[in-house]
Length: 385
Figure: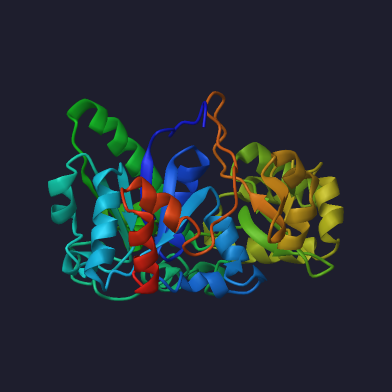
């Protein structure tokens, strides 16, 4: 693809779940030739609802666009040899298995880099390759609970996000690390091992709150909560919500005037009476609907914005103006995609083709690896691909 940032980079994406698949999607969007490897029965998420066609869920379509797909049975020697051949000519290997699994198949970092020392080998797991907890299973919800990310006791409740924060964060960390490793390889000629864990990602994303807590342990100060009266979400008359993000004093001043409480202007940092001030604001904001308050806030000109539902987000002018949505007619039906978020002036990303069915490109890829038509037919008959 002309003008693509990662044109000429070959990625083997052997990941079954969100972190690795999202990372591979980003690399593919920006021009990498990403070959998605699955077991012969396909990834579990192929049959998640909603499905537009058998083995083609919305999840799969979203995360695996721009990728070619092959199936390989690693329980067979022939299957392991296929993957080794593929990795011998690859630039990046992306995997999300528990530590030790690929090593048991002769496909660990040390094994593969003996035949391809330029390979960048990226593993995304729950707790990393060396942690004492490395064999413990965990998905995003477990990680955000373990890391303290959803323990919002100062807001009075535990929060569960619809966004898989540590999973998506790990995917983006992996994409960034892969890009840096590719750049380093230009200087050294060598690949390297990348170890990304969801737990470490979740900790790193809390840099402000955790650093504040650690600092307060030294100074003896009381840590600020994640919510404050000037930085919180409030219910309105119609049962909807507004976000009040008035950290900057000038915005706090305008907010107090807008809601008719000018006496609070000098109390922005009166944390000794936090509950009292929050209650006063809460009662005031329940006197008008969400949209009435938003209109008074001049469409967010001083950080008073609506808390939108996902349906409202998809229909909003702001989303339309973002350029993030693209609707295409595929052979499985009408699909609306969310673009990758990074906009690059000279090497933009785009969506070139839909996600593959399981094994859709077996013949194409195996032929490029030197296998004959007879060998490929035999592989299929034996359940190797």
